[in-house]
Length: 282
Ligand SMILES: [Ca+2]
Ligand SMILES: [Ca+2]
Image (cartoon, rainbow, N blue to C red; front, side):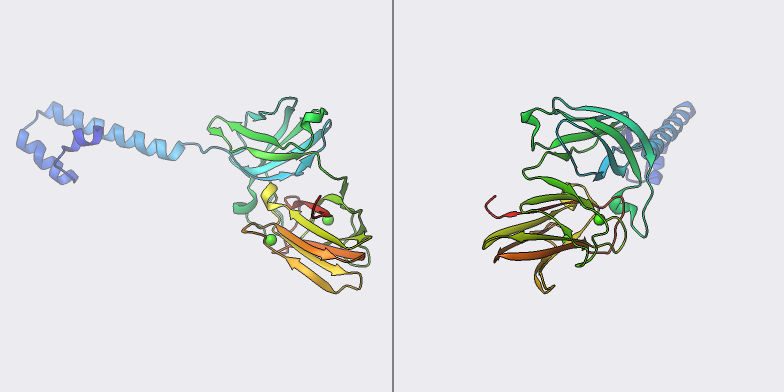
């Protein structure tokens, strides 16, 4: 409305606007006021475009999960996090204390467009109550420019959880896990492969899931399943339009090996994962 008042409703260019002003012969004072208003308007518009701060965005959460009734240090990576005033959760029984915030290192040849260039570290204390078991905790970063979309931090698990234990990067040093089992691990360096071995004691429909990108990891996982002689029997990169992987297969009694890695051979602090090995009906 302000612009049409200045230029006139029939004028599309500054030149035609000047022509109209001559037609109506406004006073010199009126012309000066018009120019001053125009300059002020342009300056304000340009200033708004340059200075408008962007709301925070979360790209990566490390680690992906916490246990109920514990205090855990979490790092959220992303963009526009350095002015954060708070990390908030709508879940009751959760307390959050911000520890630091600022620039985040970009590992190796990775791109900040994927894993963010800023981070905020905080300690989260979760309730031990039964109600808190297996219920993701929503996290929101708050800055003066707004709030991030909520990120779901896993809390608790249906099966027992172990950490990945390096070195476990080949068939010969595959890490033994139970069946069923959850592994909360990390592809800790470029080119790293984590290998696990499990046994089924009878013919079993088995589901193996690698959850990473969908939970806030930089990892674009690939899963491969081998028999105990090292012959590949199944693999999956992206399951159902997700970067995460899933294998569903009927296995006979025996020992098997499951290997996981990044599709781009990337790794580092932004590449945590959760591996779930279970019976398909569990
Ligand atoms: Ca690892
Ligand atoms: Ca993938």
